[in-house]
Image (cartoon, rainbow, N blue to C red; front, side):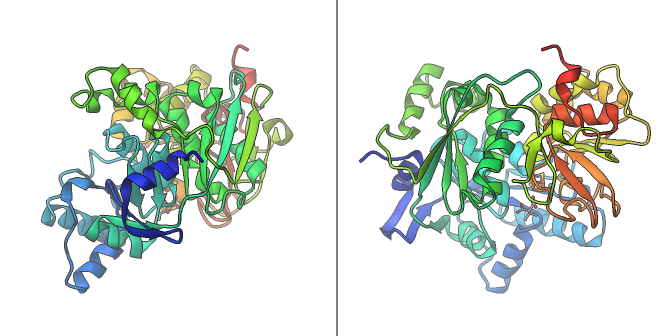
Length: 429
Ligand SMILES: CC(C)[C@H](C(=O)O)[C@@H](O)C(=O)O
Ligand code: SF4
């Protein structure tokens, strides 16, 4: 029997004698942010174990609320800052250099095919786009990871989502993953690893693959994965060129991290997206998904473009292509948050920031901010937001607020009309 990519990564990182319920894996990187890590740091300090397994394998950022908005978030940042200094963690990103963890860490080249990655954050699955096994964990696992560089998982059970077809203009990876979650439901992949495969995924850039993997957890999955290939090698090339002589050599090595043809899956789902229309969520769960046409005309108060799902340069370009030369509908607020400083400067260089500003958008520094309703764009009771983020839970962006998840193109269309709108009307087909 062949093996899945997840099984291969587990095999390569296994410690001790495993049982299916108890697979102790060596970790390649432990990622940290200021919401969950300070709790682990304080606890380790209390136990007299204020150590890290390897400062070079810990990457840390202050990203959720930055710059700090109040004394509590300032204290969280301070704990991170002092810890990074004390533990000699060189890859620590503070105000001015910081951005949304799941966009920043890949951009810095920290995630490689075949890696094991944990973080105290549910969207850690994003990094699976590189062919890594990346999972969000709780405080106890994070502590053990920081201290010992290991994490215990159950033997991976994979499901395959094979996607084919060519996307219509105005339809993107976000629409695809919303359609997948609709099909799977929010529990459909519970405790499973989703492999995103098929010709459409092969043709996607890394940004789109990250959008897919980012929302794997919204179907309950432990992780989402894509096979590492030429696209992956080209994205990582500046970081890996000393390890491989040519891109071809890197691509050949990465094949080690592809599932075998006879690997076993809990289920296989085939999806042809040629006819897929722009998607939108309508309720408080990420599987409450409809064609955007069914929701057209629903008024919105705020547009939010950003987050680890859709705050990358490709996302901003898609929104800007629709916003160019247009203005926000009267009474509608627009907020755009490039996910990292690198994306922000690229967007400046390409004139994208100007397009947003001319349209009337407020451009914010890279941060999670409004995505989780902690700062920078919290909704008031009864307000509605067209958002490129990944969660529409009740109160997510502010108590009593309603969040409609959609693609950057759809969010841009809503910005212009002030209502949920099909972005294809603004694009040449
Ligand atoms: C704050 C953090 C623990 C949380 C998560 O785990 O996902 C956040 O990033 C979110 O998206 O709600
Ligand atoms: S952008 Fe949103 S979903 Fe992503 S890590 Fe930040 S709060 Fe979580």
